[in-house]
Every structure is written in structure tokens, then in C-alpha cells.
Amino acid sequence: MTGAGEGDTSFKCGFVAIVGQPNVGKSTLLNKLIGQKISITSKRPQTTRNRVIGVKTDDRVQIIYIDTPGLHQHSGKILNKYINRAAINSLIGVDIILFMVTAKGWSGADDKVLQKIETIGVPVILAINKIDKLAQPDMLLPQIETANNKAVTFTQIIPVSASTGEGVDELAKALTAMLPDQPLMYPADQVTDRGNRFMAAELIREQVFRQIGEEVPYSVAVQLESFKREGRMLRISAVIWVEKPGQKAILIGKQGKRLKSLGTRAREEMEKLFSQKVFLSLWVKVRENWRDNERALNNLGFGNE
Ligand code: GDP
Ligand code: MG
Image (cartoon, rainbow, N blue to C red; front, side, top):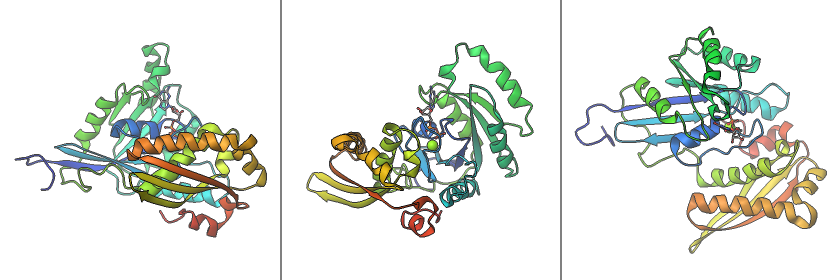
């Protein structure tokens, strides 16, 4: 057995898929569980587009978390079909499903996601997130009762706050207890399956979601052009693709102010992640309707997960 502590005979390892409707806090929870930013987050639904894996290893257990894009309501665009497919595919072969709702109450959209996972036949743990927003803790009780009356029997129901970290250790313990005995699958020091280029592009997209209003972020894709080490500095350049000239103007802003502010925040995040000085250049370009163009999507790395 590799990696397990000295003299260890049992090591647990397995996959946990984090599933729930958009905006319940899946990516925030993943980052908290791993203790590092792996998946980008924003106030807007459908920020996550790709499956992202976060790996947490200690001397007795390795938990491999899969952050799924929220299952989209169909909008017809090919991009959304790809995203739905990635979300469903990522559930195949997992050991546990971590189903997330928020403390605000159970909605019809939550039921739809639940319907999709109940056929998979894997144990489901329910995390009720955003409990920091509750005025009083006993407001959770009716929601736990609602959960207990669902067709799926939850192995456990655990209230958490992905933001403050409340309940997150307890959740990790509950997940660990359910994992099979087997050796680790990823090297103990690996925290994600995504490379530096993907992470850099995502940090740019995160700032677009956080700083640009309305529908524009949904029309944005980020493509890394270069990622080069130069002495003690990283030189990164990227294209921000949009679908219309008007969107380009919005992203750039008056006298380039918007783009500059995006770039600054993204660069700061990159410097944190890579522990290195970063020189970042950004270009905004238009590619009409890329979200519905198979070839453009494949060029941007969609459709092959
Ligand atoms: P996802 O779409 O399910 O991945 O959701 P995100 O992780 O992107 O989170 C959506 C929004 O909810 C972000 O603005 C988060 O900061 C916020 N959020 C996530 N978890 C919590 C929580 O426990 N408490 C509060 N107050 N906000 C949260
Ligand atoms: Mg997300």
C-alpha cells in the first residue's frame, strides 16, 4: 500500500460527487473541504462549466471530490448540452453522492436534481448549506422533516455553512466513514486534476462573473494563449471570447477600466495560487455565437468530458 501512514493496514479512498442545483454552494464547499481554491465561485448560477476534481489526502484517507456543474435547465445551446452531459457523466462510478440544498427551503428544482440521482443507486448524504443565513437554528427542523419524507433515504443529513466552515469537518467525517478500504488513487500531494493553464483561465472567468453584470458572463469563454516561466515570474496571456461586439465594449469599459480591473483581480488570485509574480495580458475578441458552434466549443475544450 502506498502513501498510507507507517504500519497502516487500512486506508480508505473513494469518489464523492457534489451535486445540487446551481448556486447552492457546491464549489464553495469543495474549496472549504480541500482548504484551497480549486473551483471558481460567484453569486450567479452556472458559474462552474467543467467537472473539477479536488483531492484531500491525509494518512488514513483520500477523498476525491467531484464538483459538478449544476444540472442546467435546457436552453437548447450546445454548450448547455455539454455541461449537462459532464454533470451526469461525473456521477458514474462514484462511491457517495453529496446532495446539496440550502437552508432557505426545499424547492421544485431541488426535487428535479434528486430525481436524477435516485436512479444511480449510490448512498446519498444530504448537506443543508448556508445555515449562517438562518436567523434561528430551529428554523432547520421543518426542512429536515421535509428531507426525511423524500423518496431517497439520506444516509445522513448534515447542516453546514460552506462559507464559515461550520459543520464541514463533521461532513468530512461522515463521508470518510462510508468510503471503501482501498489504496489511494492520486499522489498524496495532488489537490486537483486540472493543470495550471486551466486554473489560470478559470480565475479570469471568475472575475468576469463577479465584475460584469447581466448576461455577459454567460457569453464569455477564456482561452489561454501562453503560460511561460520567465525567471521568477510567470507571463500569462489570454483571450476573453465574447459573442457580440457590444459585449466586447462592456468588458473593456470606458478607457479600458473594466478590463484593467478584471485583470488586476485575476492576476492577484493567480499570484496567490502559483506563489509567484504574474504578468498578465488580456485580449477581448468576438466569435459570434460560439456557445452554439460545435467546432468553436471543441476548440475551447468542451464536449470531451
Ligand atoms: P455552486 O453554483 O453550487 O457551485 O455555488 P457557488 O459555490 O458558486 O456559490 C454560490 C454563491 O453562494 C456564492 O456567492 C457563494 O459565496 C455563496 N455561498 C456558498 N456557500 C455559502 C454559505 O454557506 N453561506 C453563505 N451565506 N453564502 C454561501
Ligand atoms: Mg459551482
